Image 1: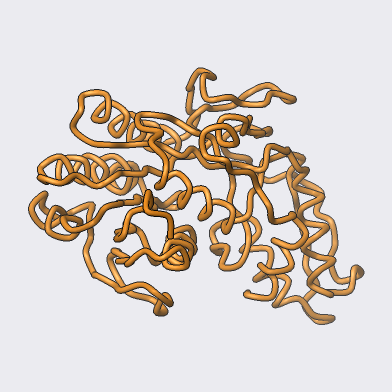
Image 2: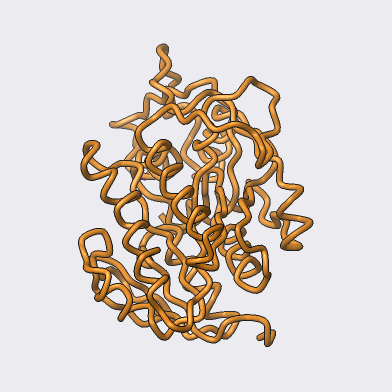
Length: 305
């Protein structure tokens, strides 16, 4: 492990899709990792676990949880949270409390906030979205995530924390959640049979998908840099058709094509029909670029589902 890297890390939301891979990557790079979440799930190799609901915890309890860390990663968030109150608690109030807690510490850890490309809002097709693109979030999820990113960046500018925001595109790969398109499709394909064929309706969107292990590696690299107060896009840098994604996953699943029927009507699409991140800043500042090809990511997703 490089001396510039922290020796201990706390990952808020450490048992979620992103959090588990981030914990694993940090542990592999020599960090002493503590995963913090409301409830435990399967153990994460190389990580300890602390049950704590940061959204409702006191500043003092949060400060105690992160007080010995050199790095704090906020991987908490829930695109499927029920209602504005819960969404605000999960994203805005949690981050506000976390920033308050970190700012009280004598030795302040580096704070990495994981944002979302949807904070930019809908953009015209063909746009490579750079970090200076105006923000105009079109959903409650995106608005609350943008508010949390601003809390971290404003606190960093004020000298209260050593913060950085990684604005992520859509994550894919092993462990993809059921509330996401790919995780849900994998579950549907598992249940497909001659007696229960799948009717698949896919929007005509084109989106930027990046493997979750590449995201985790970006977190490790961001932890070891001094990109304080920066907003950095993390994505594949490529827009892929949702129909192509579905086709790849159907192919790797081995489900016979005649059991997958195309639906007639498009489903509702949230956050715009096009996402493609400009990732030049991540390459320049972090020395990061995506390494896991999309087909391998979907193969590993299927194998783990």
